[in-house]
Length: 314
Ligand code: AVJ
Image (cartoon, rainbow, N blue to C red):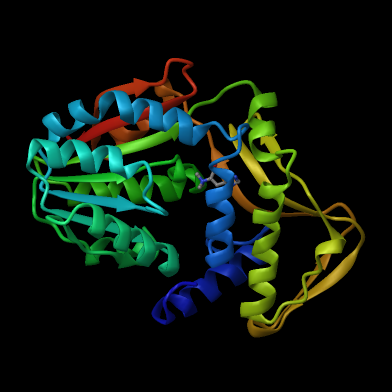
């Protein structure tokens, strides 16, 4: 779980989200040690296409990304197991510019493991892991340029538009003339495929989402009961995001002792656990623009499912 210093902020954010309409748990509750492991399992599911699409683009473009950025520092926000980051590490190592890799992740266990294995595989590289939320952790990052900040896997889709604007603005403000941002974004597509990607037959995604309840019961002394909720991922066609969460099967009350909250759920009421926004170039490019970024390259996989965006400060 997050470091002790960020706990009061997380508790406050959790209280606010649970009191919101709809009720919601901050997505960071998904990523305790078990949640991070379940997510790594999700990335191997045949119906969960984003990692393979992103790997296809990275495989084709890593050399070009390296020669265009000549990065000395690679920062990765929400690095997880950093599996696909290796495309960038290989290309930048081959070019000979890379000196430092700073992975940032909320899961300390995954961070420690991935930092270890990368340090072992790239002995000339200084690996400087930063544990924390990718929003808050920004100031702790090394800044020797040219730097490349990577934010892959469409993790940016977990943020609401206003949070996204805030993060993009802060990233733009950190980037110097020679720096660049590399964003992986999942694209709007047939809702049936999106729903399959978030409601897989093996139940791994459901277990991943339900684990947020387990984490909150444990950490906040809450009384969420799994059997009182059904897994309920939905495509929101207006917002163009997957609305991922659970639905109360019967009316009941859940207490969250450490937040001094009693939550009344109506039968059928939803508890959102995360959103996963999907993007379109014609909307995202102006959005980047408003945050002070311009698109240098917009690459997609052959099927047009996913995009990798290289952006620069304006
Ligand atoms: C890690 C946020 C990119 O939104 O696709 C996968 C999380 N949730 N299946 C996504 C997730 C359910 C994932 N991200």
